[in-house]
Image 1 (tube, rainbow, N blue to C red):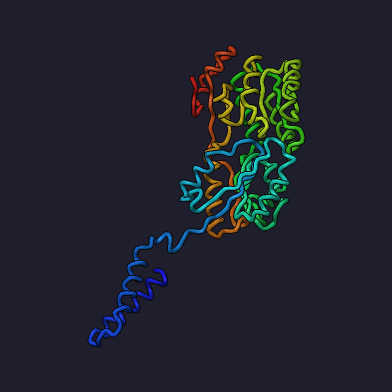
Image 2: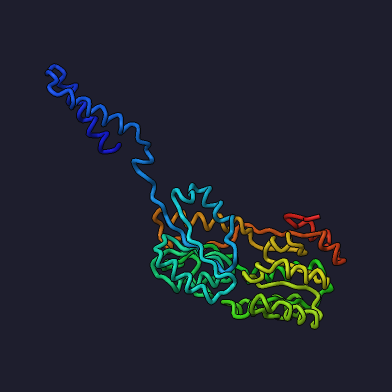
Length: 345
């Protein structure tokens, strides 16, 4: 109840308690009644406007994911009413992330959401006080983003994609689907955080499967044609990528190259398959965004990031594009098809 309403209520109580006394000032009665009516006519929202929280969203690519904002909406956050977003996109240039992260800190945002290893590291370096929700690939412990998964410490927590382990699983699915494959080209973003550790783990997986890896580095968007020509010269039988925003932004380009050269492919995201790729296996990104939104909500309500363990994926999806298989003359074995969560025909 507003102060005007409380004043009007006290006035009317006093007035009716002394009804036996003559009303000496009619104007006082009219004034009190008007104040009461005015207070009752003011909406509750206007009496106590909700606090608008500010979220910084720092990302390497070009387009922020709709899934995250949908998840925030389901938690009751409506942009312009009780939340506002500050988007900062590096547009493929990871060297800009440090500057953009510092800008978000200066804007005094309540939380920074940082998908991807490079964005997570930039946010961590930019602030020791603003909570950061990291999300994406790489091992956040190996990268130095958190102290441990169970006890992240500091101001950073989040959800991880555990991409090194999943890339090994993708090699298994490739070998099971196409046993004759002996060499696999691996697209790698040159200089990406934690990339050497991921490659060491992948080499171990490949050796156990009897596969030879051909590591092909890509520095930026202008390097793809050169990298593609290397893959063709090396006569690779299949293609995978170590997840990176650069590859995601150029998914159609990569898929078209693979199709033209009849390469079996397996990617980390269903976006590649929807663009015409053969297979995809990885964490369910819609679920990752949903859980990241839950962490943001908890932090806004007072939970400290250090008290929120870093979560690993709980849902995975395996998608096969039979139409793409037919185009490049490949047949997916029935036992592999039976394990797919979704088949595109």
